[in-house]
Length: 195
Image 1 (spheres, rainbow, N blue to C red):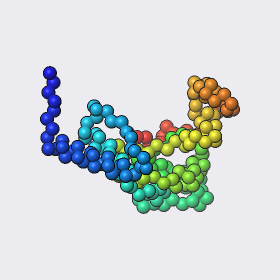
Image 2: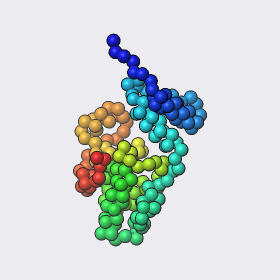
Image 3: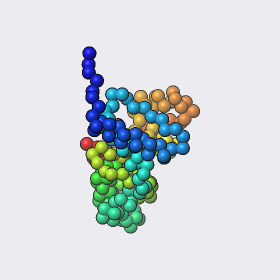
Image 4: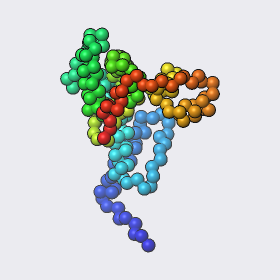
Protein backbone atom coordinates (compact mmCIF):
# COMPACT_ATOMS: atom_id res chain seq x y z
CA UNK A 1 0.00 0.00 0.00
CA UNK A 2 1.48 3.40 -0.98
CA UNK A 3 2.41 5.67 1.87
CA UNK A 4 0.86 9.10 2.22
CA UNK A 5 3.38 11.91 2.02
CA UNK A 6 4.20 13.40 5.39
CA UNK A 7 3.29 17.08 5.67
CA UNK A 8 6.26 19.12 6.75
CA UNK A 9 6.34 22.63 8.16
CA UNK A 10 7.33 23.83 4.68
CA UNK A 11 4.21 22.13 3.22
CA UNK A 12 2.03 23.76 5.88
CA UNK A 13 3.54 27.19 5.18
CA UNK A 14 3.01 26.67 1.47
CA UNK A 15 -0.63 25.72 2.02
CA UNK A 16 -1.15 28.83 4.18
CA UNK A 17 0.51 30.98 1.50
CA UNK A 18 -1.70 29.37 -1.14
CA UNK A 19 -4.86 30.09 0.89
CA UNK A 20 -3.70 33.68 1.41
CA UNK A 21 -3.22 34.11 -2.37
CA UNK A 22 -6.70 32.70 -3.03
CA UNK A 23 -8.21 35.11 -0.45
CA UNK A 24 -6.43 38.03 -2.11
CA UNK A 25 -7.68 36.94 -5.53
CA UNK A 26 -11.23 36.70 -4.15
CA UNK A 27 -11.08 40.43 -3.27
CA UNK A 28 -11.07 41.30 -6.98
CA UNK A 29 -14.32 39.56 -7.95
CA UNK A 30 -17.88 40.52 -7.04
CA UNK A 31 -19.25 37.00 -6.72
CA UNK A 32 -17.86 33.72 -5.47
CA UNK A 33 -14.52 32.89 -7.07
CA UNK A 34 -14.83 29.52 -8.76
CA UNK A 35 -11.95 27.54 -10.15
CA UNK A 36 -10.81 24.00 -10.76
CA UNK A 37 -7.46 22.63 -9.70
CA UNK A 38 -6.42 19.10 -10.44
CA UNK A 39 -5.42 17.05 -7.43
CA UNK A 40 -2.38 16.06 -9.46
CA UNK A 41 -1.20 19.67 -9.63
CA UNK A 42 1.77 20.25 -7.35
CA UNK A 43 1.53 22.82 -4.57
CA UNK A 44 4.44 24.65 -6.18
CA UNK A 45 2.55 24.94 -9.49
CA UNK A 46 -0.62 26.03 -7.66
CA UNK A 47 1.42 28.71 -5.90
CA UNK A 48 2.85 29.95 -9.19
CA UNK A 49 -0.64 30.12 -10.70
CA UNK A 50 -2.17 32.05 -7.80
CA UNK A 51 0.82 34.38 -7.54
CA UNK A 52 0.28 35.18 -11.22
CA UNK A 53 -3.47 35.76 -10.72
CA UNK A 54 -2.86 38.14 -7.80
CA UNK A 55 -0.02 39.94 -9.61
CA UNK A 56 -2.28 40.39 -12.65
CA UNK A 57 -5.11 41.81 -10.56
CA UNK A 58 -2.84 44.12 -8.55
CA UNK A 59 -0.78 45.37 -11.49
CA UNK A 60 -0.89 48.83 -13.00
CA UNK A 61 -2.07 49.07 -16.60
CA UNK A 62 0.27 50.38 -19.28
CA UNK A 63 0.54 50.39 -23.05
CA UNK A 64 3.21 48.70 -25.13
CA UNK A 65 3.77 52.14 -26.69
CA UNK A 66 4.76 53.53 -23.28
CA UNK A 67 6.89 50.48 -22.45
CA UNK A 68 8.84 50.82 -25.69
CA UNK A 69 9.35 54.57 -25.21
CA UNK A 70 10.44 54.03 -21.59
CA UNK A 71 12.93 51.49 -22.92
CA UNK A 72 14.47 54.21 -25.10
CA UNK A 73 12.71 53.64 -28.42
CA UNK A 74 11.53 56.61 -30.46
CA UNK A 75 8.14 56.04 -32.07
CA UNK A 76 7.52 58.76 -34.65
CA UNK A 77 4.09 59.02 -36.26
CA UNK A 78 3.84 57.05 -39.54
CA UNK A 79 3.44 60.20 -41.66
CA UNK A 80 6.81 61.49 -40.38
CA UNK A 81 8.69 58.57 -41.97
CA UNK A 82 9.53 57.84 -45.60
CA UNK A 83 9.15 54.23 -46.75
CA UNK A 84 12.70 53.08 -45.97
CA UNK A 85 12.71 54.78 -42.54
CA UNK A 86 9.31 53.27 -41.80
CA UNK A 87 10.40 49.71 -42.71
CA UNK A 88 13.45 49.99 -40.46
CA UNK A 89 11.34 51.42 -37.62
CA UNK A 90 8.70 48.70 -38.09
CA UNK A 91 11.29 45.96 -37.56
CA UNK A 92 12.71 47.82 -34.56
CA UNK A 93 9.20 47.85 -33.05
CA UNK A 94 8.64 44.16 -33.88
CA UNK A 95 11.93 43.22 -32.16
CA UNK A 96 11.10 45.52 -29.21
CA UNK A 97 7.71 43.85 -28.79
CA UNK A 98 9.40 40.43 -28.85
CA UNK A 99 11.71 41.59 -26.04
CA UNK A 100 8.53 42.47 -24.13
CA UNK A 101 7.34 38.91 -24.94
CA UNK A 102 4.65 40.18 -27.35
CA UNK A 103 4.50 38.30 -30.63
CA UNK A 104 2.62 39.32 -33.78
CA UNK A 105 0.70 37.04 -36.13
CA UNK A 106 -1.27 37.38 -39.37
CA UNK A 107 0.43 40.48 -40.73
CA UNK A 108 1.02 39.38 -44.35
CA UNK A 109 -2.10 41.13 -45.64
CA UNK A 110 -0.64 44.52 -44.62
CA UNK A 111 2.15 46.53 -46.23
CA UNK A 112 4.91 47.75 -43.92
CA UNK A 113 3.24 51.16 -43.78
CA UNK A 114 -0.21 49.71 -43.06
CA UNK A 115 1.22 47.49 -40.32
CA UNK A 116 3.18 50.32 -38.70
CA UNK A 117 0.04 52.49 -38.79
CA UNK A 118 -2.02 49.70 -37.20
CA UNK A 119 0.60 49.20 -34.51
CA UNK A 120 1.15 52.93 -33.88
CA UNK A 121 -2.54 53.90 -33.77
CA UNK A 122 -4.14 50.76 -32.30
CA UNK A 123 -2.13 47.76 -31.10
CA UNK A 124 0.54 49.66 -29.16
CA UNK A 125 -2.13 51.84 -27.52
CA UNK A 126 -4.08 48.96 -25.98
CA UNK A 127 -3.73 48.83 -22.20
CA UNK A 128 -2.19 45.71 -20.76
CA UNK A 129 -1.24 44.73 -17.20
CA UNK A 130 2.33 45.71 -16.32
CA UNK A 131 3.45 42.22 -15.34
CA UNK A 132 6.98 40.99 -14.69
CA UNK A 133 8.49 39.63 -17.89
CA UNK A 134 9.95 36.14 -17.77
CA UNK A 135 10.38 33.11 -20.03
CA UNK A 136 6.82 31.96 -19.26
CA UNK A 137 5.10 35.26 -20.02
CA UNK A 138 3.79 35.76 -23.52
CA UNK A 139 1.27 37.97 -25.27
CA UNK A 140 0.02 36.96 -28.70
CA UNK A 141 -1.33 39.66 -30.99
CA UNK A 142 -3.09 38.23 -34.03
CA UNK A 143 -4.05 41.07 -36.35
CA UNK A 144 -7.17 39.30 -37.69
CA UNK A 145 -8.58 37.75 -34.52
CA UNK A 146 -10.73 40.47 -32.96
CA UNK A 147 -13.92 38.73 -34.09
CA UNK A 148 -15.09 41.81 -35.98
CA UNK A 149 -16.73 41.33 -39.37
CA UNK A 150 -13.76 43.06 -40.98
CA UNK A 151 -11.22 40.76 -39.30
CA UNK A 152 -13.33 37.68 -40.10
CA UNK A 153 -13.39 38.72 -43.74
CA UNK A 154 -9.60 39.21 -43.78
CA UNK A 155 -9.06 35.86 -42.08
CA UNK A 156 -11.28 34.03 -44.56
CA UNK A 157 -9.85 35.88 -47.57
CA UNK A 158 -6.17 35.43 -46.75
CA UNK A 159 -5.48 32.94 -43.95
CA UNK A 160 -8.17 30.26 -43.75
CA UNK A 161 -7.46 27.05 -45.60
CA UNK A 162 -10.13 25.25 -47.64
CA UNK A 163 -11.25 23.08 -44.70
CA UNK A 164 -11.67 26.11 -42.42
CA UNK A 165 -13.59 27.94 -45.15
CA UNK A 166 -15.84 24.90 -45.66
CA UNK A 167 -16.58 24.62 -41.93
CA UNK A 168 -17.28 28.36 -41.77
CA UNK A 169 -19.96 28.08 -44.47
CA UNK A 170 -21.59 25.24 -42.52
CA UNK A 171 -21.47 27.06 -39.16
CA UNK A 172 -22.48 30.47 -40.55
CA UNK A 173 -24.39 29.84 -43.79
CA UNK A 174 -25.62 33.46 -44.02
CA UNK A 175 -22.08 34.89 -44.11
CA UNK A 176 -20.70 35.82 -47.51
CA UNK A 177 -17.53 33.85 -48.22
CA UNK A 178 -14.91 36.09 -49.85
CA UNK A 179 -12.81 34.76 -52.69
CA UNK A 180 -9.52 33.38 -51.44
CA UNK A 181 -6.55 35.60 -52.31
CA UNK A 182 -2.85 34.98 -52.03
CA UNK A 183 -1.17 36.99 -49.32
CA UNK A 184 0.39 40.12 -50.84
CA UNK A 185 3.36 40.20 -48.42
CA UNK A 186 5.74 37.64 -46.91
CA UNK A 187 6.57 38.84 -43.40
CA UNK A 188 4.99 36.42 -40.91
CA UNK A 189 7.55 33.64 -41.38
CA UNK A 190 10.30 36.13 -40.43
CA UNK A 191 8.57 37.45 -37.29
CA UNK A 192 10.07 36.59 -33.91
CA UNK A 193 8.16 33.82 -32.19
CA UNK A 194 7.96 32.36 -28.74
CA UNK A 195 10.89 30.00 -28.20
